[in-house]
Length: 201
Image 1 (cartoon, one colour):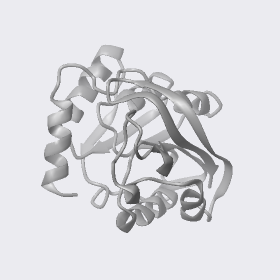
Image 2 (image 1 turned 30 degrees about the vertical axis):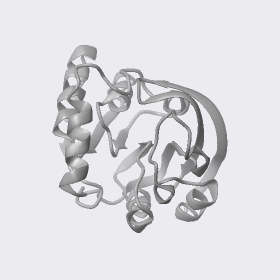
Image 3 (image 1 turned 180 degrees about the vertical axis):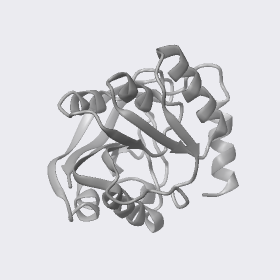
Image 4 (image 1 turned 90 degrees about the vertical axis):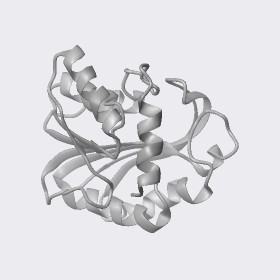
């Protein structure tokens, strides 16, 4: 990823407030409640709300992001909640995903150009242990034009069909587009068109 993206996220996360809130994603909460804790990966982890929550539930949380400012806030949140997380500074293309290592992967609002998205998703499938779970919530292409968050570039938004194709090598158990009311800090707030997916390797 470019320095331009790094600068953007560092500036966004440099605020004192947690710009996407301290509470975890609701779909993550629903899905983790039904899984046995193990090792979980959070790419594009931002300020740490999801990895810290997973650690509170007994998971070994591993996250990464481009932003040093995001990492700092994630470690502060982990300290506040009295849990440990792993969090490295990496881009999508340079993180060492490993093979058959993680028991779950959580992808929340990690929006990428189509030129790198498919390879990223395939890396996630490879890094999952057999039986491992993928939990995804991202903006649908119908989010374009809404004020509740997300990229303004159609190529960086998803459809259920795109996710079905990217993850066709594993068992998709839930894949649905929904209109929900987001309440995740000031940048994810209001009615939003999202896709939620749960799958197992």
